[in-house]
Amino acid sequence: MTNVRLVIAFIWAISSATNSYAQIAPIPFVDGLRHTGVPSCSTAGCHGDQVTGEGVGPIVGQNEYFQWASRDEKGAHSRAYEVLLTPHGKRIAANLGLGPAHKSDTCLDCHADNVAEEYRSQRFQISDGVGCEACHGGAENWLAFHRIGAGHARNIEAGLYPTEDPASRARLCFGCHIGSAYENQFVSHRLMGAGHPRMKFELDLYTTIQKHHVVDEDYRTRKAVTSGAQVWAIGQAIAVERTLTLLIDNNIGSTGAFPEFVFFDCHSCHQPISEGINQLSWRPNPGRALGPGAPILNDANIIMLQAAMRVIDPVLAAKLENQARALHAASQQSGSHFRRAAATLKTTAEQAADHLSEVDLSDPAKVRAILREITSDDRVRRYTNYAAAEQALFAVQRLTAALGLADSEFNAGIERAGQAAKSPYGYDQRAFGAALRDIGRLAAE
Ligand code: HEC
Ligand code: HEC
Ligand code: HEC
Ligand code: HEC
Image (tube, rainbow, N blue to C red; front, side, top):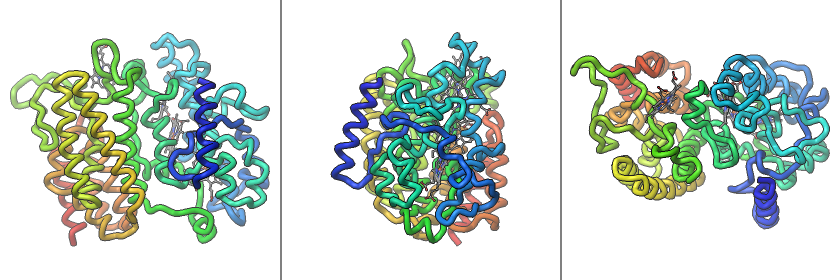
């Protein structure tokens, strides 16, 4: 693995000599740089000035450490290691026969900045969990000079990870929140069977929850700012790409005689067996020509991406539509049909991600059009599964927020949709659809 990391770091070194940092910075987990540890960031005068609110630093707030370390949701990453020591964490590891969770790479590769021993400086502590450098990259080459205003481009060149770039951010977050092909960065159904929570994620929402930076005049001079709607859309495209990459990976995509279950909708298997014909929960879905009784590929991100592309690029949207349909059909044919169809759709999702990175989604008319698409009759009929409803709800929340419509008449509809999709087992598609259609009507006004 060390060799793989070195090769990646080397390729990056060559490419970054010629390019600006666009697409393919290696994620910090494999950046081949020494990680100097949270204590090297958190000192007073640096990112650990004891202040509240927006901070007092002339350039950045300088209170980022305290936000990362806070005990609420914002500080989840600082507790990522701690949770391995709770009864819950221990039980998962025990069920898997792993030994202590906090010593197992199977857990640490996502619950800490688990770079190889040779990439840890003196002050590095694994118990700091998902520390600053797990996202911002190993600081060995930029720690000293980033403080004296070397400039963002130089910092990036020295290994700072481009977290402000939505595509790069997606690849970073998804490593732990969807999974990656590196070592143990994947929560398989086996881990879930052992008690690991289901994974859910949406790039713009989760960025906002853990946000510890301020976008002010000064920020805008240093970094490109991307609208929330665009972050959402790029996140959807790269989520599809990432999921399909893992699905066709020989080491991840199947277990024994079966495909890996986590790629399928949890509730296509996990539901009570209905006692009478009137209790059957199966409903047709216009996005897939699957009859009753088939396990269903979790297509939540695909449905969202289609909605975005119908506004941005209808030709590509139609392609996504056909290829997704073919993928569902192939899941009933054979493993090789399934993987081939997944590879085809993956390529189109990559094209969509590239296209979405080029367009400007700060235009409210486009954002409204996407919101109308997500709440349209055709889309709403596709939210047959809880996972799809969850993504649709995230989308509605983020797109109304991007339009500056939070705390408005949209709230009542969002509240009702949230109630209908409050829990996976009580998901009420009819009530959810009705709430979304109402939101759509408002968006059309
Ligand atoms: C692919 C990355 C990944 C791997 C591998 C992984 N986890 Fe997690 N884990 C997460 C994420 C992300 C969450 C948060 C899920 C959420 O709330 O959306 C989480 C949540 C948890 C929680 C719940 C924490 C809480 O606040 O309630 C526990 C406990 C946990 N993981 C333990 C483990 C153990 C034990 C292992 C190893 C057997 C492990 N994890 C492997 C990413 C991972
Ligand atoms: C889970 C990933 C993650 C972790 C962990 C993390 N950050 Fe961040 N950080 C981000 C993202 C995303 C942004 C916003 C995008 C940007 O400006 O690069 C950000 C922004 C910042 C900024 C604002 C930069 C500016 O130009 O205004 C600073 C400073 C910062 N982080 C410092 C820290 C410090 C210090 C820690 C550890 C105590 C930390 N971060 C931990 C992801 C992370
Ligand atoms: C090295 C792995 C890793 C990376 C990279 C990472 N996360 Fe996480 N994240 C986790 C783990 C593990 C948890 C669960 C920790 C816990 O339960 O305390 C988590 C929790 C969260 C939570 C809290 C969720 C909740 O339900 O409370 C948010 C929000 C979040 N991450 C956002 C992000 C964003 C945004 C990025 C990318 C900028 C990111 N994460 C990158 C591992 C990671
Ligand atoms: C293709 C069918 C299928 C899919 C899809 C599926 N599971 Fe499972 N799940 C199973 C089977 C089979 C078992 C083992 C049941 C047993 O041990 O009796 C299981 C067991 C579990 C268990 C352990 C339950 C217990 O009480 O022991 C959890 C938790 C779980 N699955 C979560 C999930 C989650 C979360 C998802 C979606 C990400 C999911 N499953 C998707 C078939 C599936």
